[in-house]
Length: 345
Ligand code: SR1
Image (cartoon, rainbow, N blue to C red; front, top):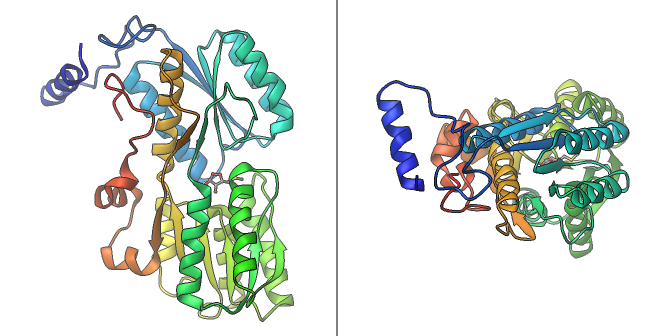
């Protein structure tokens, strides 16, 4: 069955009120092994909690369903040893490919190589495994941070005191940090007076506590660059609790329906974010894995481009959910990355 025929079949099924066919018995017209069905893939995450990672996983699962693939999801608990074990378990399950989503490179490189040695394809999302055989999915973090910082300058000029939320060792945060470092060099009027951050099971709550201490100690801060939505949420909580709305502005990465509500609410200090749709990134990761399994090159760097979302633009557009955003901004709602005629996106 060609791609168009498959679409026609789905439309006919929907018109008849039937469920979308799962093609568990195979995807006719697809290359082997997808034509026969029964293909198992794995998604092994380092972090599962939080809106970004939940949406990423559901996007991956939705894409796997469209492909008739059995996607085994191993939830992350910020535990490097457990993530290694889960990769071993996935290999033993006989999966054809593993998507490794975040993690600490030094604890993953050898086990990722073990998967490759066992004939399992590996795709990395936001973790640099430093292996030419492993394609990398990312959200163009340099562009993401540059767009956020351009908005910072538009809103605040080139002279201000800033707080910065960062935890080293996570590839996307490290890439965003490279841009922040360059930005400070180019803008000598910008002073980073405090740096803080935590990534754990309750990131926003930890960052809230840290931000309260920082903002009390540094009343001169007017801008906080918090390039992860859990960071931004924590800083926003602190600003609200300290009554600093109108004095301190927050700029972030990522978006979710809950984030849109927080950004657009009255007097919110969270004034801009730059984001992809994480469900789209999850789908792209699974498509990249499927292409690799089919012997088709997904590319070395698979990039999902982010979109700048200002508080002002979101309010004016009356957007309240990620779904509405996807409908209004087509580049946010889907990605041309890792596609092929037999793979729908
Ligand atoms: C701890 S790393 C958090 C980031 O990972 C993803 O790239 C999201 O964009 C999030 O900001």
